[in-house]
Structures are given as C-alpha cells and as structure tokens.
Length: 360
View 1 (cartoon, helix red, strand yellow):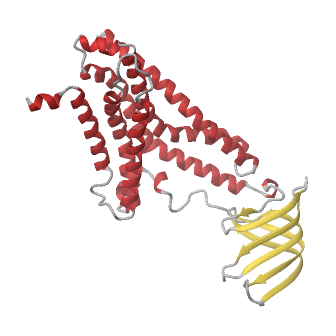
View 2: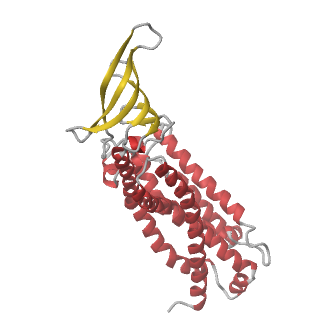
View 3: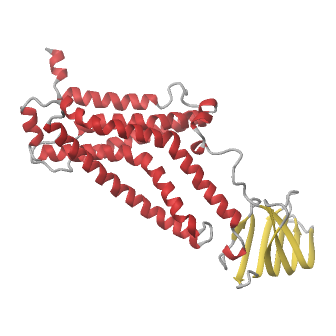
C-alpha cells in the first residue's frame, strides 16, 4: 500500500504534468491550425483532411512535449513543496531523494514506454501519413484550386502557371506558363484560356491551352521558336503517393536498423535517445527544483530551462557532427546523454553532502 506522502507527491507531479503538457500542446496546435488553414485556403490541402493533419501533428509534437512537460512538472511541483516548506518538513522526518523518486517512478515508467512508442513507431508513421495527405492533395489539385493572380507550381516537373481569373466552368483566363524542357531550353506559353484534362494514365494530366502563343529557346540567345496555336496540350506528371526514397524521419525503425548511412544511424540514435532523455531529465529535475523555503516558485525554472536548452542543442549538434563525419557513429549521441546523467548524479550527490562524506 503506497504511503500517504508517496501518493501526495505523485498527485502533485501528475496533475502538473497534465496541465503543462496540455498548455504546450495547445500552443503548438494553435500555430499548426493557422498553418493548415492557410494551406486549405490556397488549395494545397483538402478541407476534409485538415483535422487529420492536425491530429497527426499532435502525435509529432507529443514526442518532444512529453519529456519537457515531465521535466517542467517535476520542477514546478517540487518547487511549490519547497516554497511552502512542505519538503523541508518531510526531510526532517527522514524523507530523502529515494522517497521522492519512488512516486515519480510511477509516472515515469508509463511515460517512458509511451514516448518510446511515439518516437520509434507512431511518430514516423504519423509523419509519413502527413506527407501522403499532402501528396494526395497535390494529385487532386486542379485549375479551380489555383489562386488567381498568383504564380503556382504544377506537377512534379516544376512548371509555373499563372492565371488572371478562374471562371465558374473551370476555365482559366489569360494564362501564363513557364517550364524547363529536358534539353535545357525554356518554354513560355501565353494563352487566352486553359483547362485541365484527364488522360489514360492516372499519373499524367494535360494542361490544354487555347488561342495562344508558345516561345521555346535558350535564354540569352536569339535562337527562339515562336508558334501560334488554337489548342496546345502540355502533359505533366503528378507527384507520387509513395516516394521511392523517404526521409530518415519518416523511415521505419527496421529500415534504419538495416542501413549503414550516417543520416540513418543518427536518426536511429535520436529515436532511442528520446525515452532515454526522458529518464535523464527526470533525474535532473529533482535536484534542480530545490529552493529555499518561501522563495519564488519559479526561481529555478530559468536555470532548468537553460539546462534543457543546452542538452537539446548538444544533441542536435552531435547529430549534425555525425552526419558530417566529424564524430564517430560509435560515440554518437550517447556522450551527450552520459554527460547530462553525470550532471544530475553530481547535483544529487552534492545536495546529499556525499562529497563531504568522502573527504572525511
């Protein structure tokens, strides 16, 4: 049966973690919601996929928010107990670090398991789903989704299309198109009307222009060919739903294990390091939260955030050094985790006056 103090400390940390994580997630989702609405307004994303993207983005955000939320929750909860002289009173009754870490462990273990699942499996699959939704939106885009008066890239070849106005029947008026041909020459087409036509190949569409003029040649030279036409069809290939070479962040854990590329090795170590960092941050938070009685509740938060920022930046720097070949993959990101863990243990030892005992 858990002791009353254990349940009390656990409740303080758990409720604070829920509040901190919810607030941080709400802030990030608000920014993401504005971004998604902008993509919907520009026709880059279908309306019915907006909430799917936001939900998948929440999974991505939680991968980082769970560790930082727990770190801040421990500092805030224990900081309040220090401020109200509750922890000093507990320590006077022989409550030590083990008695603080024990209720923290009840929350830490399920969170580490959850964040490991997020970083190793669910997060990459969510990112892959977001990219697939975007690819489906680009494939489903037609001329009615092009914002009039703006230059828009169409297809996977990088063709740029501009239309002055889109009529109700789907025809675009006063069309300008520019694209680079395979032989390196530039093609510029101006036409009165344009429309999109399906083809027998589901991955290819035609942009059919009416009553216009086509200019083809090499910029900077006089070798240009001018052709007037009544109807001119330009094929373009739609983006693939399944890219042949996914980004490391979207690759499965099994694919990363089988690869020996530096970018894939660092991504593998990064995913494994997130649950490890959750444990290390929890160890660090306990000694960092110690304040004098009746001191400000948020007095140590600035120091804690500074430690977290340095920790995260060192991980990012080590990841870049491995990808550049400056740092050996065997050393990888592990030395950063080891340094942070040693710092936490040193702070604990110092606060428990172990150094003084060793000198005696």
